Length: 335
Image (cartoon, rainbow, N blue to C red; front, side):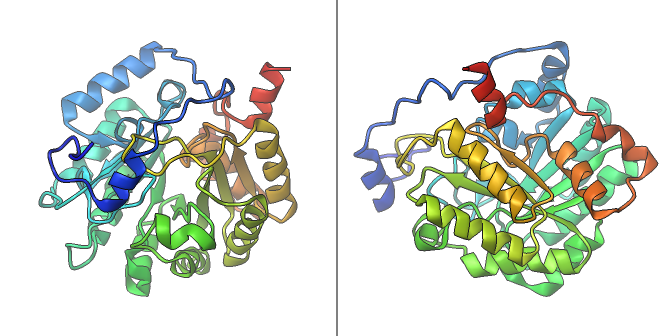
């Protein structure tokens, strides 16, 4: 393999990755396809509006379950990222000009879908003077304006760790301020060369200090050790992270980082217990859990444990649907 699907020449790291065949998934990594009426409706609407969703762009295995329960994740800022992480399916390249109407488009789609909870994330936009801060913040504002009964989680890049950028994001008042660390310090630079581990922790701390419910994610199976996972969990909690999702790395294509190991469900259960013991307010842990999986439920859990009042308009978020991808559920199904 010498060319990427879009026709460009493969990067050296992609050539090296391509020498390793795509791994066969173990039996416990399965997602049932259940295309209910709510899922079909949302899929048709996303296509009609020309929106980019992480659910589709990243090939999320939980799209059927989440969309059926009126939760969805939107990708803003275009479909190409100015940075490249070795695990990420989103294309790297020169992004298109910012669509100034995108915040309104997303908000109107949330309204049409009657979503209970929306996660908004986006590509890194290092080509912009504000790195895309206005776009992220304005999308939150527009969603809240048109959808007072919808919770909004904002999953951001690091915005170079600049305090003025983080403050502008928090001023838009998302229910959850999320930034994903993804992996452990030893292999961080190799896998996420445009990011910095300590800077990512600082972004979370800034969000905490500005009064946000904070959240992050760890992906397992990229070369980390069990001890390093525990270390990263402690680092995140010390940085002020309230909520954590823990998941298995699934290789998007042969151009991406090979899978180092398949983490068994019991280890995910053990990690959930460990994270709760060290003080995380909410944890979702399982092979097919993703950072936005059951996001509304986690937010409500954090609010209750912090002793903060859940607004009446958002009280319905506490009663969410199934959690088929939690490791404990998977173990029960195979016992």
